[in-house]
Length: 622
Image (cartoon, rainbow, N blue to C red; front, side, top):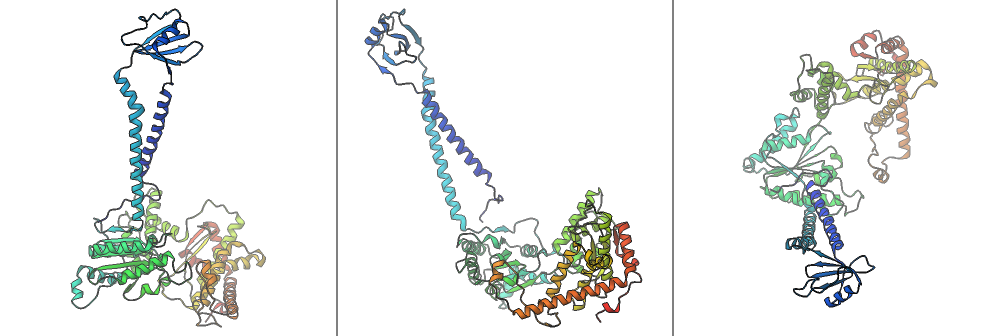
């Protein structure tokens, strides 16, 4: 099994940095020794015969003669440094030859020891040679390491799991009963291949996990490996793609070669849409690195030999953009849908995430699961974590119901911004705005239930009117969508009714944007128009180049009709909201007054304040 060093998040490994620093220090030391050696190098002296030296000394031409053993170093008159040298005759001394000391200064320097000479020779000659040799060896090893790195550039970067003590199993994953049932068959294929082969069944080559982000696709893949007890190669689709053409394909070949050696095993490709997008879009041409990598994946999945017991699991939340060749039988034989959890599943997920957290007796997780319709598993995990953080901030020894409620609201609608100060006029306008949303949503029959109304700024809004459906819904009718549009516009219409058309504010900007998006989606994607009923039209999404290159599938006349239909829906919703607000001004003012006093009103109090409200005939759709 090949081992790989841990990633360093873009930083150079410490070992490489240390080696580079040592080489740099050795180079500096070498230059210093060379400089010291050059500085200590004695000057070149002219050598003269000993008899000539004695004659000139007696003639007064020298200032000083320094005797170092048999070596004489002579300094001429008028000069600061020695310029001549000579050597004594064997057995002779300066006294023997009769140099007069009154005309020249004679000094005797003790001869240097052998040890000192060896040390000096070593410092100036041997040490630089050793340093140069060490530097050359280091440079050669560094170059060899870079060569090995270049050769491993096309190797797979997949992480191998399967030997961990804390393996993930299906018991660790709450909900997703249908998905786990489909994947249990994959586990049986890996555990008992003969059970299926004797009946002529072939092991599936690929299983595609499809679903919104945050619902546990990666965790389910880990659970399959944990249940089967086989090696698990994990890699992201983006890790195949490099700027050099052919590198991704090389990594695919290397990954599948490792998998076959470790069979039975699982290959898990997360976010496969990064490399498996539809070919022939005109982006990058036929030699695009991404397309070359995809081609290699297609070839490898078709090239599996029967009996290899290697299964490819892949996860994506964009199955619509995958290449058809990747999805055909024989490659990804199965598609497992992993959707948002239902209420019972949400309760199970919450119980798992709160297992290691101390809960007070008043915490009602079932009520929390009812309020979290549309939340993913990651959202529920975030709520549990936020609840623990809030409890710690409030110095609680246990997580209370108030902590859980605050955590849920922080995740769902954003944290409170109590530091933002509004004057009395702005507070009153915000109260009317939120009361307008609430009264319209409360009166209309197909709207959701008002859960909370607050004028405390949250997230990027100045106030929030929060609606929660009483139960999970899979489908929505035209009547429901029209009531949603009306309550979206309730805030702007309340401002208009109370202050006049010319005094409406920018506070409804986000509401108007969402209403326009919903109305257009009803016409173009759901076929809910009056003139264009049961017709859908392509939505121009994606990056700018794709939108430019895409040819619109309908004419300018149809586009005009779509705009008219959207305008008609918005106009109708505004009129219905206006009728409801004018017919229930007493209830609107009651809620406004309470909001100014308390700032936040819960669902039960809102229901009491709205007693006596009614739906005018002009606002009814049936």
